[in-house]
Amino acid sequence: MTSPSEIAGKSVLVAGGRGFVGSAIVRRLLDEGARVTVFGPAMADDLLADRAGRFANVEGSVEDRAALAAAVAGCEADAIVTAAAFSAGRQGLMRSGDERADKALAVNVLGLRNVFEVARERAIGVVWTSSTVVYGPADRYEGPVDEAAPRAPLTFYGLTKVLGEDTARYYRDRYGLPITGLRLPLVLGEGLWYQGAASAIAGVIAAARAGTRHAVAFHDEPMDLMHVADVAAAVTTVLAAGPKLAAVYNINGFTARLSDIAAAAEARVPGYRVDHTVEPPAITFPLIDDRRFRRDTGFRPARGLAEIVDDMLATETPCTKTV
Image (cartoon, rainbow, N blue to C red):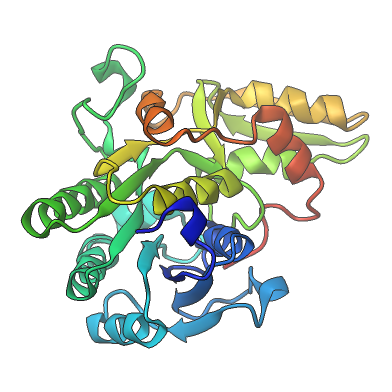
């Protein structure tokens, strides 16, 4: 991978680069001066329309190793970043995994292996997005969990991430391939298009209009949250750090309850009120400990609760755009 002074001018292929997280990574890489190639399927809406002409685009799927290899060879990639994951329409990643397990396995695990194989052939590094849903329910743990805590997924999506992490460790141990995975918490920000917990949270902000009310039924347990731009910054931090990093890290932006987010939105929009019906969560995930990533890289997220609410209020439709 690269050092901080060498990111500018380097060629990086981003698989899944037109998705919610992937498009933010592309933006960050472009801002840092990288030469970017986006690899992935065509999407309904273009989250990168304002960056048109600044990156190369290759349509394809990580399920197609030959197409991926050709794209990596064509751009002479110095590194691969992959945020590719299966989602059936707007259902969200966890529900899509449970309802279409075969497809989730094909993209999230076998497709990820294709990325590692192509990287091995070209002797380049990979940064990829795992998830904190590799952990089990909160009551299995005592306090926040670090990378040493046992994984015990209760969703098929979480299982695919566990399998992805194990595959990554195999390629690191067997071939010495520099691979680092980042376990993402719930991610918010402009471009969030799929349904699920994150969209319910973002909807509280998106609905904020002076003198209006918004009803939401959701739990009020503390949640780990992160702005998508901070996720992108974490990815470029890994690219800059090089092969010295560990196989996987927990990352986080801040911790809040839905009631905290609702109060922040209400305080910023005169007369806006959130009618919050508290419901028990289907699964309560443990809070995470991200100190290892901060220690190893010096990374600090730029956005807390106040900043993310301000940012999303400034966006006309923060959670209705599609990839």
